[in-house]
Image (cartoon, rainbow over all chains, first blue to last red; front, top):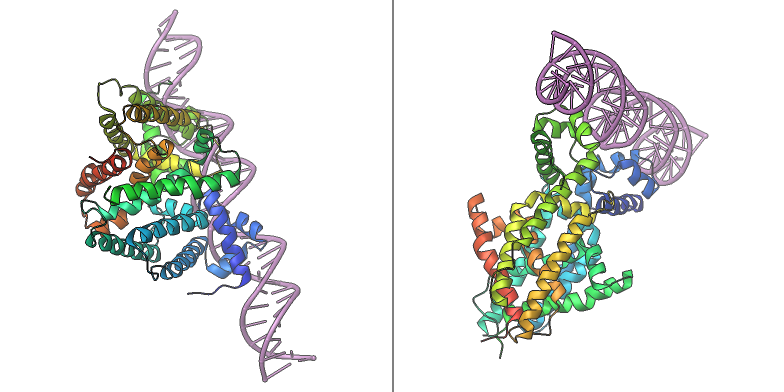
Length: 207
Length: 207
DNA sequence: TTAACAATTAAACAAACGTTTAATTTAAAC
DNA sequence: GTTTAAATTAAACGTTTGTTTAATTGTTAA
């Protein structure tokens, strides 16, 4: 893991915020330099180019994620509890890294900058492997149904949240949400329990 | 509904495809003109500016969607059949308008070009109202559970599909999908039935 | 103190950008 | 055939873009 000094981190954080709200192509290095309070030449000086800085940023954040993931799945819980724990983890992580996911979303969908994304793909693979293991554990103990498509459950979990975030203005109007706090609370409570309820209904036999 | 001549449609279609794959800021009017085989001045001539052309494009596509929606919900089906029908509609529509959804996704998430999007918001509202009506119908007849959050079901349906599309390279590798045809078939079959199964499990009392 | 290197700056660079101009061609109407 | 307006063009416009240069300041070590 590469280390960055304070000024380099200033640049990366300013870039992250701007890339997320304006897009990579919509953000000039002059605006990044201004936000980070450094000279525009510092970006090329430290990172080589605007594009290499994006790579550095993505690498920086995804290696962060990898560390977070490792600290889970060590406790002794039932498969269902583990699934719920994983949903909580997904949601909090996406919320914490909103900007980075925004950027990743666009960069993944565009063919313009076909950067490696190897680091991100690794995180996703680890995620999927861990998830599959939990589900199979639940299936073997007879708790979970077996006629399900395991690979498509994470898309349902993450997709629901991301779609909600993407259409925030619409749902704020639809649900009468007026403050940032109320919005965050809605995600923490209603949205989280909707996702858990949905996955539970899909997985667990009704008795 | 504004009508466009053939050349104007050429421009709009070229722009749609490029905006989707390169992003709005990543696409130059010169590349659009080249793809549409017109002089670069024709874009300003017909639409006023690059940004106004994007507005025209979004308006053009969303008014298309509004028309499509009206032709549903007239048949005599059970609530569950209607839900399944709606899921099919969602999926085929997102698939048919992949490019436009790509563009909308980015434009909604960015604060850069705060265009009205009134037309799109209308479509979403109509969608939600129609969906709510179906669910309540099912609840009143005792078929559907009542402890559910109706507003969050469309995000689960659409989010699952969009997340799958967004991470296409990952899922192609994960699922061993090698051709475009196999990918489209996977969406038509496995993904569609996963979504139906999930929503059904959430909505319907077992047996 | 001086040598060496890192950090920082203002200025300049060519290239690409969206848009406009002014001239020309095409098409339609009379 | 002439007139009138629309369609189309190449060229130029002024900005903004990402990057580099060359000079200066700051820091560290001998």
